[in-house]
Image (tube, rainbow, N blue to C red; front, top):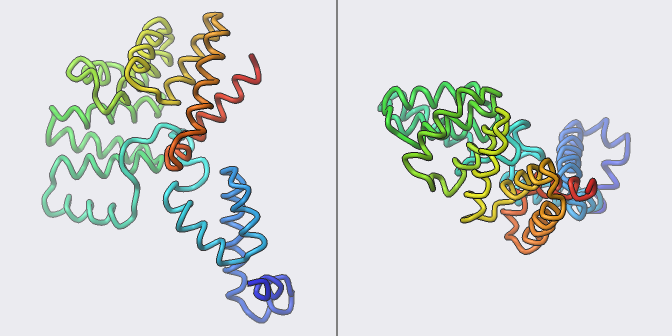
Length: 259
């Protein structure tokens, strides 16, 4: 491995072996992703142990968590389910032959997780055309519209789902409603919604945004307690959960630094 690394630093080797450019580009891609994700040990291994570590990082971290930073405006707002190119092709084939509402919904969820919100909205609406009473599709469309900065359109959809099933999606729909209420300036309603979420769940996404409202209300000590609990809980969470919550933990630490 060290021999290969030394060869890649040799200009003559790079010129005479075009494939080496691909290797260098791949290593650089994985190295930058590791830095953005805060995976310092992985970054060091990619530098010092060459392509092998880069490949391991790709399969063990990148493929499981996606690009560092996720889908831009959807960071920290993942819906259940993972995006996969083969799964997209499978769903497109099923839709072509069967045209079922559930397949449109599953495809929309993948687009949402990728940050392709316009495509997600179109697929959610296609699902609802085939099954207008599917509260999963209604809730996820509401979340999609919220991320598209159309909170006014999202609110009645999310309120309908919460009225029908207050615990829908394990509290994720209620969290989306709280965010919608915040976006619309309905801070008292949002405060009550976050309290309802936290009565049953300890999501970092909920605790951080609840803390932000506490700060706005002047309850700095209570906000500090919420943020410290969020950071402490993260230290004992499974690896996959820590990767999912990384955005919110950084936000919690930033807020604590300002208190």
